[in-house]
Length: 359
Image (cartoon, rainbow, N blue to C red; front, side):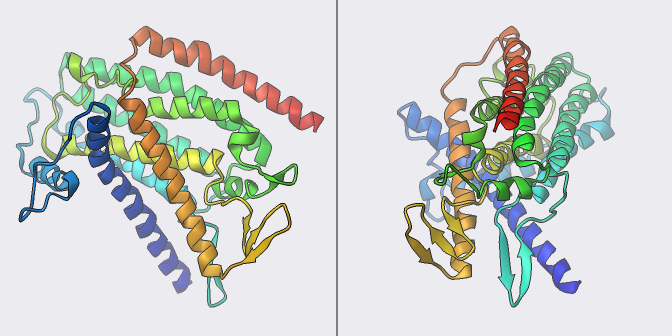
């Protein structure tokens, strides 16, 4: 029992630290990637003892600035709700890390440690439950500010969540039908099988339409360009208009945490999770007959590395989209959710059911 408690604590600290480090580095990567796309240098001025570290020092400067700025609360606003809103948004994102598997099993002295903090049978429902809570932070923040523009941003956030969580939910039903489980660990394990004897049974191959729907809906849930209507910095209608200091910092950082979560879910559901093609517990076994036995620790390290490489790719892809497309009009955003993702999600479920019955 003591070993299990220690293992859970270590795993929790590992995945939480990894997620927060990813989110922190994204604040730097976004500046550098946008600078590269716009043919400029990007953040590189801040330095400690003359060390600039390619602009990484700006991360520290941002944190110091937010900590020491004045914490302003509108005189006519609700002080308690105004302070609670960013905590709700930030906390609801962090909790999701607990059910995301980042590896198979690590065996230490005969003791098997599943590389997931909480391996629950309804992991997908857990993810959707807490992901839905994040919008309450935006709604409460806009309302508690007693600002019409902030409230408008909050209403946009609510409408956007309702519109796209339906498509998001429909996109994973095909995955549940194929792998027969709501457990994220079970889904990742199911993608270790082979199709036609050589092709990994990853979600992208068995649910290509589902992946497109999922990625568009998940990206929209992060509320970033071209889907950032709840914030709309150039229109000054963001639900965080009346926020400053670390309260604004929590909203800002939670956005990058959501980017990491979207990348982890895309990896787990559609790109094999920790799976490496043709890598099994005892090493590689290629379809053409070659085998390469590997020590258990090497296999585990390859699996964990595979997971985080895929997550890095999807984080990069989201930054690329963010700096490529202009913002949608609000009617275009709603049309995409209700007129395209919703029908396509239903069509995908129907096609999946027919194919499962036929095969």
